[in-house]
Image (cartoon, rainbow, N blue to C red; front, side, top):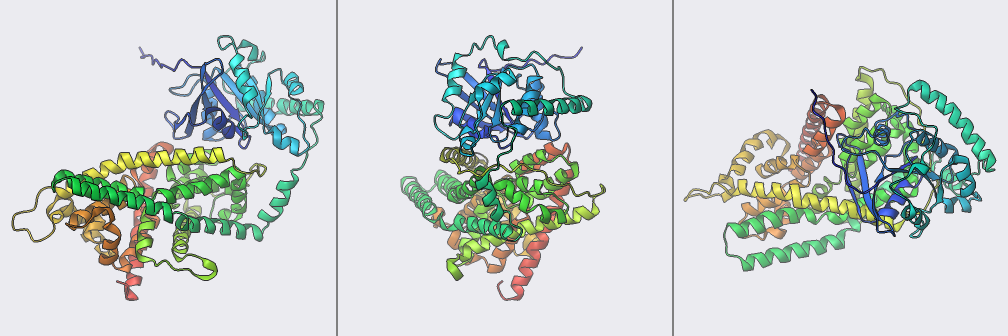
Length: 637
């Protein structure tokens, strides 16, 4: 007899937001939930889920779930499958929604209405949200919400997801609903179960006819061009000027990461120094002071200082996403990526990997071709994630002088840009090799992607996105980074050195002995025992390398203020060849444990993670070896 599984769900009604990509669904979600939202993963998969709460005028609290964007409820990609599972009540650990808000882009009813008709067939209570009506009016497109409601047989509420009062009418409607009886919002023609391919074909033909009929009745069957977007695309998507502009945009971003972050980084550094001096004065010279100053402050504080640079990088990624430029970048790179065996659809997951490889790997669920998805997963870790940024910033600040080049370009920003380019070039090279040696015959798939209208990013959405990323980073600093720092401090402090010891105490500790053993492996690429130690906890999270180096050097140099010891110590103790070798290592370095776990979950086994770890280690070691030997040949050792 099988054991029944019982799930306990929150008592609040669950409202799911359903819509095509680029319909303004996420902006509407942010407007409804504000900061009262949390980001996690769907149970059993690594597709990101956003859930928030809305308190209505009636004081009733409802849960709002932002489903992954979908073009149909016949899933062709894994993220669409997640949406279908939630709507059918098959999502593990989540109940079936009590109400579905079908979000329409008023500028693209022809495509969006098909999803509404599919949702009606599920038998769930549905409410149609006509979003982006302000953009439609500016383009001379007047959509009659009442007439559309009559055609669909469902209530239609107009919203503007980017205005503070743009969802007031929707909130009022939800507040007046009888949540115990939503049968009036259910369609009568209901299909049970998931559509088969035969059903899908029949329904698609029927939906196309019905959509055409609805648009004719509303006098909306004529396509109105978006003149502003068309004028911008004539320049930004130009075969010559488009790629040049894209390269200039990316170059500007990396310049800004260094130049804009200087003042806030200095402020954080001053605060860490002040705390270190305060603890040094207040506490006696014992293990507790060493833990606080040499361990926690030197380690976690050494990573926290790079928060401004990470937020600046996220800021620009959010702007590219919010403005509608991101799909254009994918279009521009489609031909280039086709030469290495991928399509432009892989660009967005790879761009997401610049922030973190995990959401990039998650984003591959939108790629329907299995081979393209697997190759994108394998090369996504080679994109320079934000966790590498503290390591890059530390080494560049220590060994690359602050110098202005032609046209006011910053030398440090240029080096950072070249490191990102090196990661991209390496990923494209690996994809090209896989194109020629994978068992499955390569077929170039044409890129079909909807290009949304351009619009100015909403400050509130940018603020929410930055706050979420800052919160994630601070949780990492206070979680895994702090834990690994304390563990490394303990390994570096015990056992105590013998009475007649002549070296620093850390050399006699467990970590010191591990470092000496690992140095045999890494000595050919110029790494000393301190760097070798730091690479081990760096497998938990890339940023831990900086905190580990700070802790190791703080314990290696007694009497030195740990809060600001790292930068001058490595500048004095390392050669330029070692610094360049470490930079080359981190361009291709094996990924953190969280990324490995995500790859294992996405691919359903250990084969792909082992392959990925192996080839990344070989590439990293080879790149560091060549860099160190070439730099040594030119007298930089």
